[in-house]
Image (tube, rainbow, N blue to C red; front, side, top):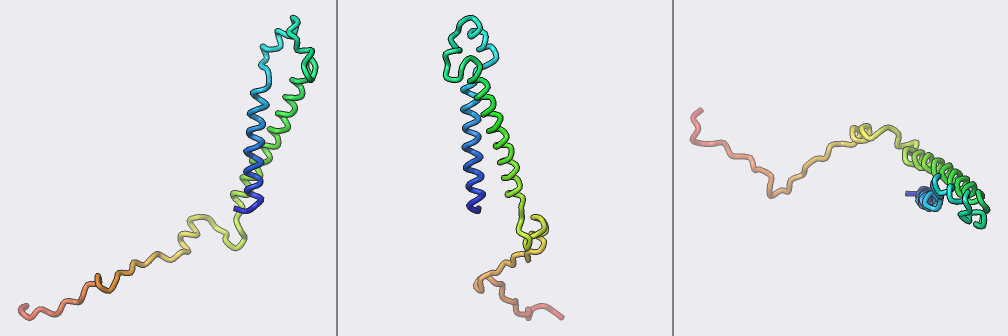
Length: 119
């Protein structure tokens, strides 16, 4: 594989892990009920609703990057050099069939004509 393919794959895996982490950090819809009754969410780092907006926007950006990387990897995987062309079946048809070569010791020796056979 080329260097850029490796870079795409590593970036793709890192983005996937970041998405997993961000989704696990987010609160469910039922978690906001406690903040309405003084759950203390207003004293968080991003404010009362700031963390939800920040995490959801970051997840959306990472999901877009993940989608684009998936398309790029699919393009790289299906891209063929110009001189190769064709598909797998064409490559098999153009390749000559392998010839089995037997060692000289295993080759059958021609039988001499039988003298006992009436002609």
